[in-house]
Length: 304
Image 1 (cartoon, rainbow, N blue to C red):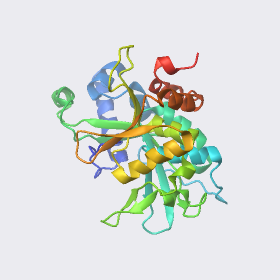
Image 2: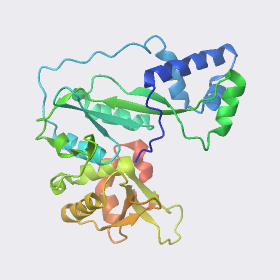
Image 3: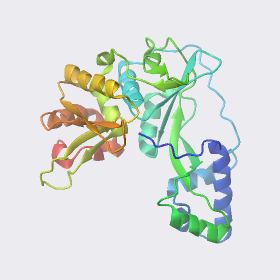
Image 4: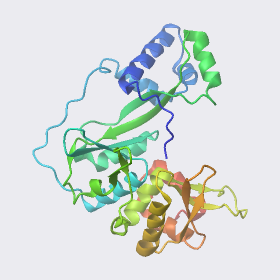
């Protein structure tokens, strides 16, 4: 799950304009694209995106008008459930009974894949998001280099994002509202509905793992007690994770256990060795259509 290390007081467009100005300054200093990437610790695709969009950094995207709202298809519903359990963010409108779904990843190819899957509900192609990163551990060298060259002391977190236009409550049998609830501060947060069994299937599991799954200790054939498949579930309560574990067993016959993380009240779902091969067999036909996520399947479980 995402850590809260962003300075959300600054809009991403403001940050992108600032970084673009720095890029232009570095170009003026006869820096190559590779040197700029190294200085700013951003990939080449992000640098080129900012340069190509230089005339539109302050231009708002017009909302695409829709005459009617269609229900999500079976595949879209599965993808939506998996990504909501993963990294997708659901935002409730303050003034209208509508929702917006945000998808954000560093993996541009994966975001382009989601864009194609929800094309009818999204009114812009993937966009670069830049935010000032307040995490001060591993970026010391970067900050010192930027400070030396340009007299500033900042570093950035980049990602690619898309979002749906405003969707009404009743879309696709209230699937969005089922996964949302208000917390003690009256803010909308993600939750696991009691009828989660109805939404767990091979497609939703695939995209859940694509977002938040990771395999551990499969570099070689040595045995390890911690070897296996994990899903990050830190944003859910222990009772919600238990619901998810039961749903995986009831619907897909997959045995999982709950592992506590070092942080208090945070847990991961761990797939038992009894279900490991079955889990990879279930998700492989769908994950194989997302090349940038195939690394989540160890080589020994990939079908030749």
